[in-house]
Image (cartoon, rainbow, N blue to C red; front, side):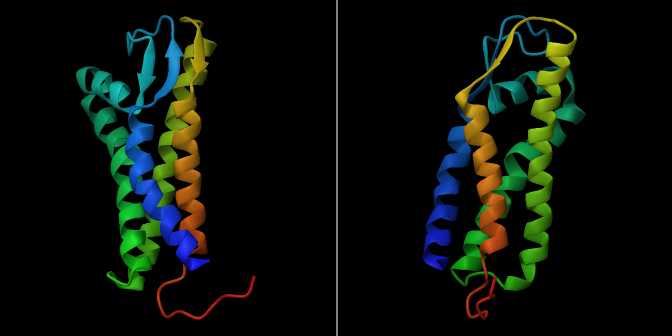
Length: 151
């Protein structure tokens, strides 16, 4: 099972960047983005122009937190990083969930104030699946040499 978790975690190192560029939603009229398809990257580009502080937060939550957690977990899984960092990786995983909340908030606000038509796209599901898979892999991973936990 640990080998399957390692492979799944390594797959996330490829899937996260794909999810960042994949369309999260399609918007008809959304003043903040002014785009027909919005991805994590295009949304961040627009945020950098309008609100630098929010852009920094979203960049950390959407890009750095999940990727650092996944990379750190891979290092622990292969015995290249001490397992004592697992609590820190758990915190990074929880922070990575915040970006899903922000995206949901944007969709809800845009739909609620009627600024146009918004449809979710396949990238939102991929991005959400990557975050949830990372969370599950982190919970199921036991460091090298640790005894098996009976569930």
